[in-house]
Length: 236
Image 1 (cartoon, rainbow, N blue to C red):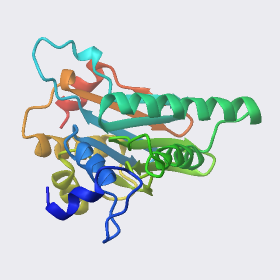
Image 2 (cartoon, one colour):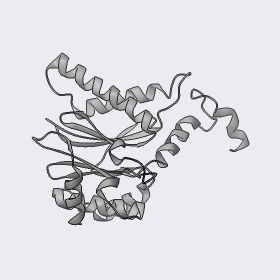
Image 3 (tube, one colour):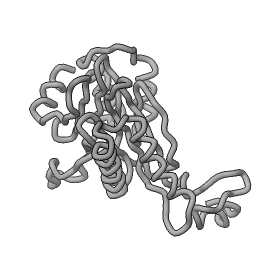
Image 4 (cartoon, rainbow, N blue to C red):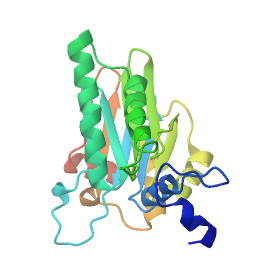
């Protein structure tokens, strides 16, 4: 830690002289140490792929959850602190359910993401708390089209056609910059995503170490079963 930095990283409400909030930057570092998470748009939807990174062969793979359904047509993948992610997912589900009960329709994807980001931003502005050490990739389909959003601990959001969060982001984004194209088929997008993930983690992919979620136009968000993931890996 730099000597001049110590006076400005004790509280989230204190800006450094050069306009930085160190606690937010530390939260971003927590995300960078998280598992590699990928999102890609394809012709009719979005695919989310997460490396679950089992820490021990004794761990039950099914007990690790990195992809969540928010409502019927919106799914979310996370990277960073798992407990923080659960809190945000629960909040997102409440937003979606309140909207459905109040208006009788599904919540728009962008509106949901902005609501979650507002919630995250509150924890960068007031004392007595800390930023959420997690980033989210939110995928969904609504009347306005197909969406893939990335959020970070500051509460910022960006829409992407293909993106990644977590420790393997630089490797994945380099491959996406070179090889991603609009209008890819589901099979082509999956193949590219698994290729990028394999390059990032430098290890053999298996159904036990992966989670894959898909949302398509006219279909509900779902997570692929282990047998489906095995078939997908076999085609790459």
